Length: 331
Image (cartoon, rainbow, N blue to C red; front, side, top):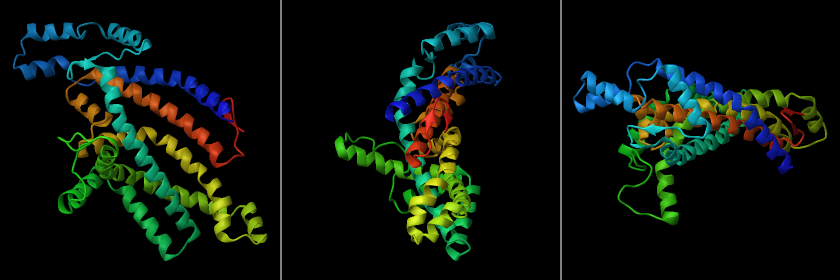
């Protein structure tokens, strides 16, 4: 089974290569439409915007070449996974992105676990207790949370739980000035992770709650559920062993689709909480017109989306063994 799933994931990733290349091409030309470049930023910071100085900077970073030449050079370097050089950080983009990848991965994985876990739980409760006070409260909260901007949620969490109550730090990945190791370091990072992970998961938890409720209500009306009830099985057994597995599949599908949106949301959350991940790095790169760094982040993000969607397809087989993955389709 694991060998079959591994082959399927690999085939999905290979099928995603043309999609990734298309995203790379579109991103390259769209970013070049934005006003300003690295030369203008560096010249402004240096207090010198003479024509000679600007030409020198553009020649240094290859910005004086025609756009099609810049594109061919970029694609040639991309084939050997050379993402270029960041003038802002003075480092190779590959090492810079890999350094920030762990923080973003930790934030996104934690947020996905929270949003899917609580979304499925609340949606199932709302469906089982349909048309009751509990169901109405859950759905009202889901609608309010769905309509609340992420940055506002983040700011409110900081004001209430960090500034007023002092339960959590306001920003950062770990406590500055402390060389913690082992379990102490893990607990310190987890302490800093709570607020940004909760803030990022709020919107998606509301989405999964609504989707799970609708899927659960539809599943509970199916003939096999009626048959299970006719056999005298308890309601809890029917929900846990039969209805839940079928109802959760649309939620997993939506989770795969929402990966790219969650990456976009991480830019806002990481900026609010000063979380040193790819989102904050992308925001800084945009402000400094570090276009190569932006392209590198977008390239890695597209790979993450393709890989995650392939892995979620494998999760289908764990949730519902009736689903088999063969080639590139579900049987």
